[in-house]
Length: 113
Image 1 (cartoon, rainbow, N blue to C red):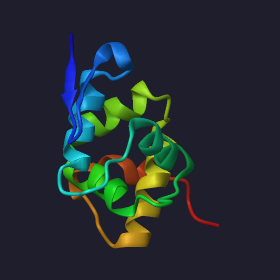
Image 2: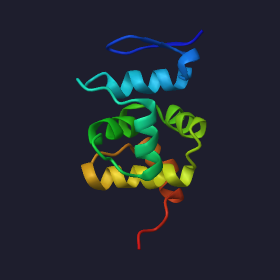
Image 3: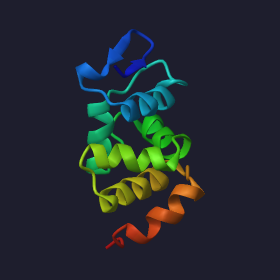
Image 4: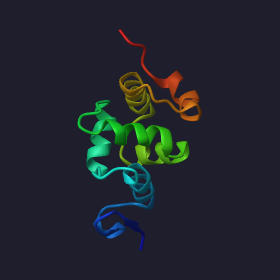
């Protein structure tokens, strides 16, 4: 059974979390008092909106290993094009960037109109 430890409790895969989700949440939530859920992170990325989670979304794109970013997106039906759009929105809003991830995503982002 896969388990992810959050600040408040242990969540098992039976509760809808994969190992990738657990690793992503552990990284994204570690530096902050408030924890983002998988559903909220997925929604922010899918809609390319930071909403109330700008630091968490920025941490997702800058601190999570690129292969995990792609695995998380794939597992949650987020296309590479949507992922690239969300990355560019995060970069424009926060100034944060990840050169390793960006090299794979920039060519996928739709051009701004």
